[in-house]
Amino acid sequence: MSDAAAEIAELKILHPNAVLLKEGGNPVVYLPKFSFVANGKGETMDLLLHPSSHSGYVTRLFFERQIAGRGVHWKQHRLLERNWWVPSWKDVRPDQPWTAMLCEHLRAVA
Amino acid sequence: MKIGFKIAAALLATVRIDLRRPHPCAHERVGFISAGLSAVGDDVLILARSYRPVLDQDYLRDPSVGAMMGPEALRKALQWAMQTGAALFHVHTHGGRGLPDFSSVDLRENPKFMPDFCNVAPQSIHGAIVLSDTAARGQVWLAADRRHTFIERFTQVGAPIVTWRAA
Image 1 (spheres, helix red, strand yellow):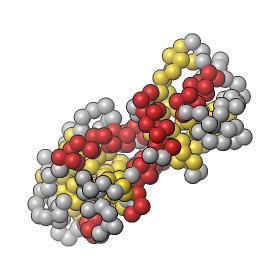
Image 2 (tube, chains in turn cyan, red):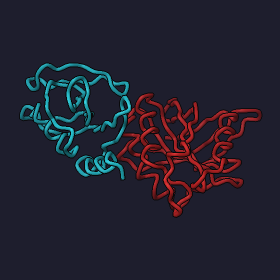
Image 3 (spheres, chains in turn cyan, orange):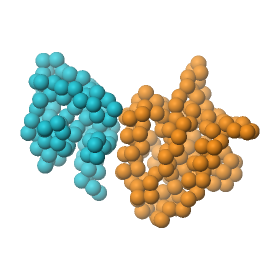
Image 4 (cartoon, one colour):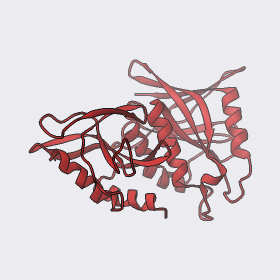
């Protein structure tokens, strides 16, 4: 099993609807209707985890929409023919399990 | 709600010819048909647009089944659905004549991967089609969390037009 296949299998335990896709030749994980806590409230939206470098960051987590009052310097990017929002949140290491990477990114909006 | 599937005879012939090609290790071939949707009252008409075969290198060697798609095959198809918003239908053939049935393997495996298409492209419906040399049968997923239903009527558009009931 490839690293990406093993990582997506782990993420599917956390979120069974997680889907492995590719953007620019790099694996990305689409997390439809992912539920998490942001700004002390429950949120549900589509997320896109980019486990390799993108736009100057070593890994990134893209959000379907901005979260008011949380995250800084939100910018919009287009991936997989969709517009996504991403806050500035750096140094989430690529050499860790994708489940841990996802949780670290979610701290940006917790 | 009744679900119909309409496909040009030339496209269907292309699919059948492709699925008959031998593969180095798999016993049969699979591919994906993309389609548009049209609502007719409460009914849905699926209009086949194009076909993409699963590439030779995207099969896994698995003698226990006719054909086993690898993760890249599935990833490419999911991405096709997501980036175009099209309805996608997994297709393979059992050959022979008359209305084909899904095998026990099809009935076990299709529900494992088809709901992912509803997750990446929820604006469309998706499904699986099994062909014979003269007819077809189809399953349809309306949403990831719902049990599949069946295509009721197929129409092969050509000269002559051929229709058959499949559910």
